[in-house]
Image 1 (cartoon, rainbow, N blue to C red):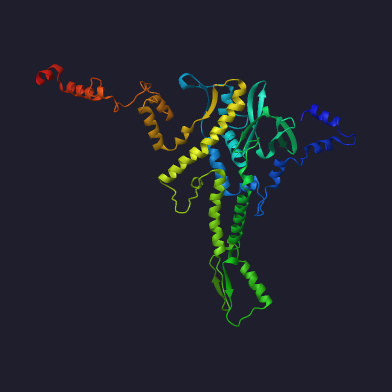
Image 2: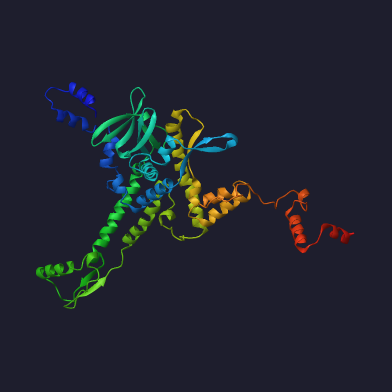
Length: 442
């Protein structure tokens, strides 16, 4: 806060309040700051667990869903383009392109910045970044934690963003905030899957905790000791036996050799049906949590019952995830960049785009088929195809080529056909002249 704003605040404060008390009062959270309180208190659920972003991320399913999607989107190369004639485009190299594709701020690379934005978008339904400008030129996008920021409509309809910075509430005008919204029914905020899925997340957390305690108890739930008929232990003997058995309880004591004396016998117990059902419920919870993030379970390494981890079926699932999971996130970012960062400059022919073809980089077979189809059908030159493979330019490779196996019927067998050219080459190699061939046919 600037000194000028501080002087205005102190001028309207009671005379008996010190400067420290005024600042402390200004830093307090208000009751209407629901988003800030929710980040600390969590969301209610019948399992009785505190569901917050930090507690949800302790579930491996949540971590994997957010991490994989954020990494997949942020790894895509991006660029700023201008629409040209004949529906073509030209790549733009200006300050905005450098900001979005090279250095969004002083600390982050483009990959780190977009990974942060997508991670917040998936977890909270909203992602925020503060616009830093010098004059009218945008120079940086500084990420803001979505758990500490929320849009707010004033009485006159003006949209501002309330940001809690170290306990102090700041208000930023909408022109200063780059806001990515997730799925919603309208309004100024996207819907948070962790908030609306609190019941599913709370149940998964409760089952995970119960499973850990069950395995941590060791022998306590694995069997019991039987004494010979007619033998009865007194209190002192029971206490001694309890002390001895405690040395073998717990997963950290697994593998120790137990010595039984006095005719005692250890009878192991099988896993109780209710415990076995709970372990099965843990498998179901993985699929349940994946639904909240639109993630096919196979992507995070969880195969449903009867499903293998390899094959064409999994390949089809990966394609569906790219189409229904990755592409909508990219479209959402591109539309927001165009609306908030490009349109204010007045250039309506300019746009920002991720290159989805980069998803083929690790699939050599799919990439080979794609490049083959593009170059053999006249949609891409050979040098453009070599550029996709990071290979050097070759002379003569800038011409568009196409196969002629679908040539018109009136051109079949003509002088310019491949068959005629091949026959002429063979006759030349054998030394047969065209006039000699004509005399023989006559």
